[in-house]
Length: 102
Image (tube, rainbow, N blue to C red; front, side, top):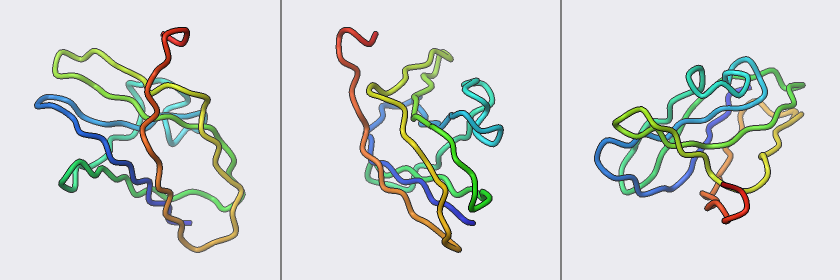
């Protein structure tokens, strides 16, 4: 199943948006093994990946700064699957961190 992840986030020069999660394809929560998103313009980012329709996992977005530091979005982990579609587009919105999460 082809899955397109989309999110709008205004980065500054030197920042990139990534995706990581509990699945091996998303790095098993290791940010160094995550999946990079592509900036498609006007703050829009996307990643296209392929998963088995029976896959279930959790995921989150994070920012990698020019100096290599990492900043995770806030909130609970997002949940994925299982789905029985040939393709799926997921539209997410950045969740800021709350003081007690950092």
